[in-house]
Length: 92
Image (tube, rainbow, N blue to C red; front, side):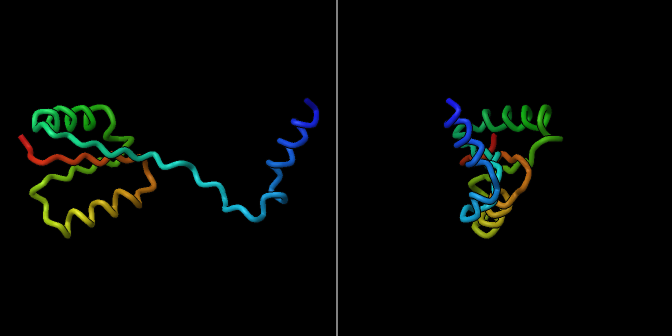
């Protein structure tokens, strides 16, 4: 048991991990597909009401042009904050 503890301590020493990349926290993003227009309306209300202060929320509709869609996807991907990306074919 002592050997395992020493090994774990050694692995967490910064000097022994020089070849690895710096620790980056895992992404806290979610992508949701909502095929039903009523579901989008309800999800938008729920996210806005309870999480608007804590999340970056993106809504991508089928009617959005390609350039705007690409820009939105890149902004979502590069967001340092927890984010939700909601896609849907139509809005009802």
